[in-house]
Structure formats: structure tokens, C-alpha cells
Amino acid sequence: MSDGVPILIVDDEPPIRRLLRTSLGPNGFHVIEAENGEIALKLAVHEKPDVMLLDLGLPDMDGGEVIRRLRASGSKLPIIVLSSRGDEKGKVEALDLGADDYVTKPFGMAELIARIRAALRHRVQDDGGTPVFQTGDVSVDLTRRKVTRAGEPVKLSPKEYDILRMLVVHAGKVLTHRMLMQEVWGAAGDVQYLRIYIRQLRQKLEQDPERPEIILTETGVGYRLAD
Image (tube, rainbow, N blue to C red; front, side, top):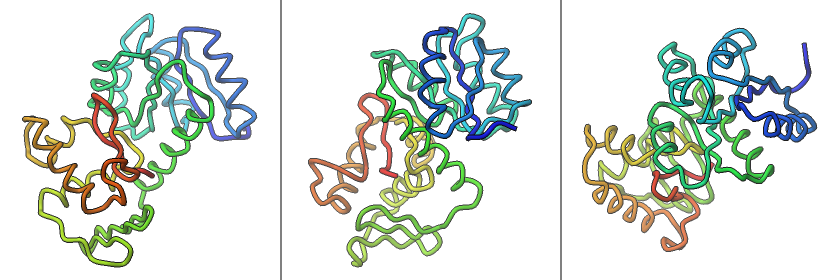
């Protein structure tokens, strides 16, 4: 068996696959490659990678279809989408289908590796992580529904807590506006309501709400809790 964390790269451009292979290999990853969606779906089952890097523009099917089929099969494989700059709609659709994160081309390798490791940590959390989340001086105890900042209790409204809980459960993962609205309000609605509550949460949790370091904005897409 090959050493390293198995990672499946799905991209029809050989130069991109070569770049990722030569960059990720020395950083502790065993690279598996697929040039289209059908091959990717087969390798996801037979090779059992720990994470997938997925280009949306595949020759045989849209990358979103790969995500849809994997999630329909019950797979929890972390999926990081490689998207072209400006493809905001594609990013949102991929995340709504079940992708964990996205990186915009051209990307820096240090950022990509950080996103991969965050996705792997999130998978561990899904498999039974601690119910207490800590970031900076903010602590969230999901079992006791208790939030503190610098050791002092923070009083949240039910909606504020529901939003924060979603972000904590998926810490490090981008949650789209639609996903948060659907979970907290039960239906997609006016995103402005969500923005108001995010602003209120930042007022209570961030040292500088105008320069947030905990609840991060993914412009045009949604929000991410700093992992």
C-alpha cells in the first residue's frame, strides 16, 4: 500500500494533475488521478481516498453530477471543488449539492493544502468529535448549549444560536446562504435576515466585528467558521 493520505484528483487537464501530483506528494499525500467523472466515481469506491479535489468542468459530466451521485450513495468523502475565478454560481451549486469547500484557480499551494487538512479534520469531527468547540477566546459547548467568550457567558437568541451551531458543526466548511436559511428558517428566504443575525453574532463574539476573525464571509457564497 502506498504511503501518504490518499487523495483523488479529478481534472481533465494533464498539466493541472501533474502540478498537483508533484506538489502534494512531498507533503504527505498519495495521489490518485481521474480524467473524467465516471472514472472518478469508480475510484472513489475502489481506492477509498480520504479527500477529493474536483474540477467542475469535466468532459463527460458536470462536476456537480459527481457530487450528487456520491452524496446520493451515502458517501461522506470530503470534496474540495477547484473552480475558475468568477464562477460564483458554480461554487454555490457545488456547495449546495454537498461539496465541503472550494479553491479558486489559480490557487496557491499553501492555501490548497490548508483547505485539504481542514476538510480532513472536519471528517474526523463528523465521525465523532468533541461537542465542545474552541476558536480564539470563544468556546461553544453543543451539549449544554453554552457559549462563552474569554470565560464569560454570551447570551444568544435562539436564531443566533442555531446559526452558530450550524457553523460549529461544520467548522472550516463553507456554508451557503441557502443552506443556512434552509436549516435555521426551514426555507430559502431573504438573505438580508441572515446577514442581520451574522452581524449580531459578530458583535457578541468578535474582538473587532468590522474585521471578523471567527465568522468569515465567503463573498457571494456564504459563511465559514474559522477552524
